[in-house]
Image 1 (cartoon, helix red, strand yellow):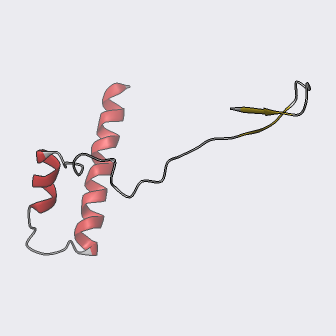
Image 2 (tube, helix red, strand yellow):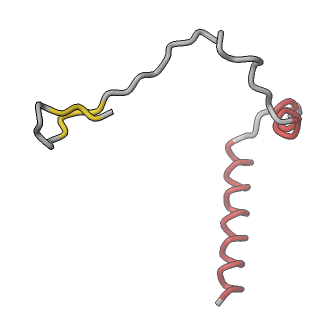
Image 3 (cartoon, helix red, strand yellow):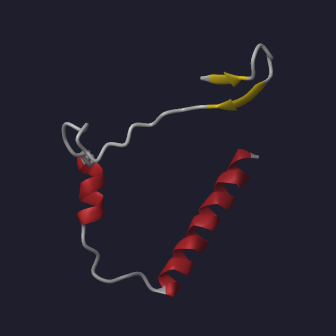
Length: 72
């Protein structure tokens, strides 16, 4: 919705309305996809250590380098 001053073609602002609803307008709660739910609920034996994370990052970096060399 454009807001104008008199007959001036200059637009000085935009007005928008957003209804405030406390969940009354929703028919059901959002549903998480089964695949994502399964990934998030799978329990790991222990949190990853810094060394494991660094090792995984180095492995991923090497894989990227091999792919780039293969494309040349």
